[in-house]
Length: 171
Image (cartoon, rainbow, N blue to C red; front, top):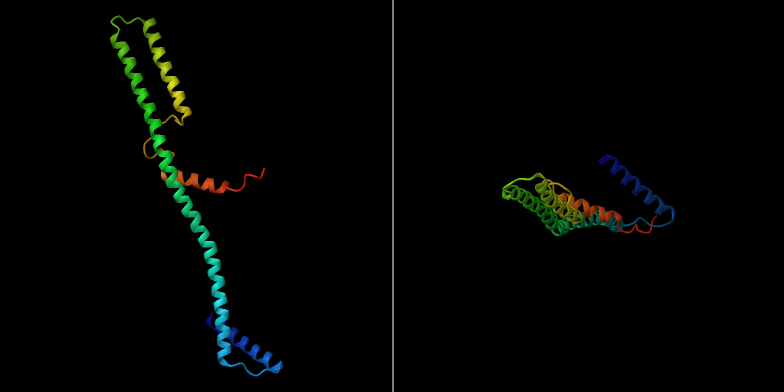
């Protein structure tokens, strides 16, 4: 590889000298050849730097936006998700307790009376469950592994937001 580069450089110098002899110019000084090479090297470095920073900088900005968006979405939506789930499970415990107390308080357990009271208690729970479902409850107990708004899920949401920006006019 080095030999190829050296041979190419030597051939370029020979062509440059031959061209200058044909045009009637004198041999360029060593300083002018060096300054020309330095300028070409600077130009090449500038092009490479511009290319790297324009692409890499943009990629870093997108990655930072995704991570920052993930943090923001997790902080905004995570507590709400936990509150809804806890509210439903709290209401379930209250409903079970009410059913138990209804059974326990009846000295004489009549099927019709108990069924009517249980139906009323369960209908109240059902209405509350519908309200919580409208607020975002998805019907499962949430531990740290099942949360939708954990950090990876929030980053995924931020990335989906990035991919849809600016394309609203396309049908």
